[in-house]
Length: 65
Image 1 (tube, rainbow, N blue to C red):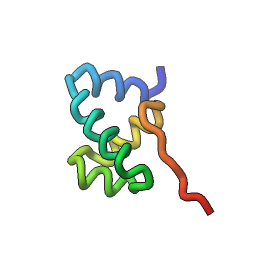
Image 2 (cartoon, one colour):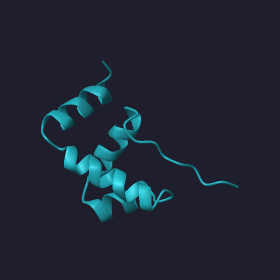
Image 3 (cartoon, rainbow, N blue to C red):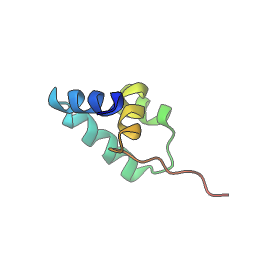
């Protein structure tokens, strides 16, 4: 298990599903939001958000050119 996956598993096991749901709900309404915006609006740390992205729990969308 990668370090990021271990962090995500620990995060979920510590009953933080509400934070994940909060981030996913925000991203559903604001798909082009930056990680910083998501963190500020949801109160979830940027490092946590990036760990969720790296583990495949969340996906980032890139701006289309």
